[in-house]
Length: 170
Image 1 (cartoon, rainbow, N blue to C red):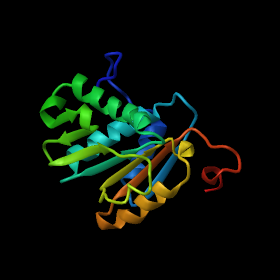
Image 2 (tube, rainbow, N blue to C red):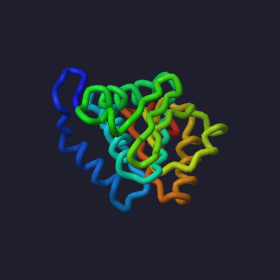
Image 3 (cartoon, rainbow, N blue to C red):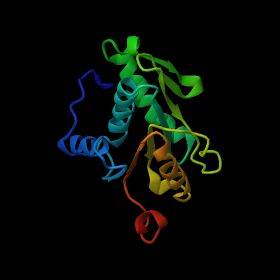
């Protein structure tokens, strides 16, 4: 996968460990690391990999705002544009905030970070960006409750939360 600086992305060891855990028998994994450690790049790569190798994948993405989640999707779209052959495997729909996975008939889709509208999905992978910025953990709990329908994995990334907040307590 080619980064926006033209170099091929090489994951850090901690990122490889996260992905190994994510695709093991662990149903839900949280990655909490400081800013500027490639969390968004990592999740966008995971979304593309999962979408490209999981039949009829449904990768659901959410952040504290749709625009923030657009950054995550934008990283994935950038990988598709820059990486050789990816244009044959994926079709991007920026206006719809979606990427179609052509080989598997799957999709990667941005959703609002609202538990009241986040219950209409049946994901194979749920990605929650900067969960500490969400108003509460209801969307995470909603998606975790849906994971058994398709044996989905849930991945949460965050930099930190406020001491004493619901995120920090969990």
